Length: 127
Image (cartoon, rainbow, N blue to C red):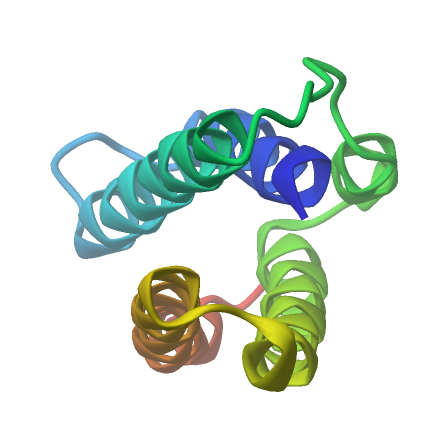
């Protein structure tokens, strides 16, 4: 999950470059990117707490995402990735201790907010 979150955060930086910094789309994508980066830190802290070494690699979602052409198509691809992450968070919840479960629930909820925000961005784009 850490590598997937990192991939999403990095892909969003690329996606943001396609939008005017004063636009609502850019501001929305910037908030989603900040949430993804924050989630990386949260997962890293959970792993550190457990004494588990973790990778600094970026998941394969990044390469797939930046290969997509068109602003709307990229956001739609991002939406699929966010939905995938929500499913992974939900699958993990029953196996987690209470502290980790609370963190994963917050990350899942942030992804659900990001999905709603990105849907609005995608609907506003013609390309």
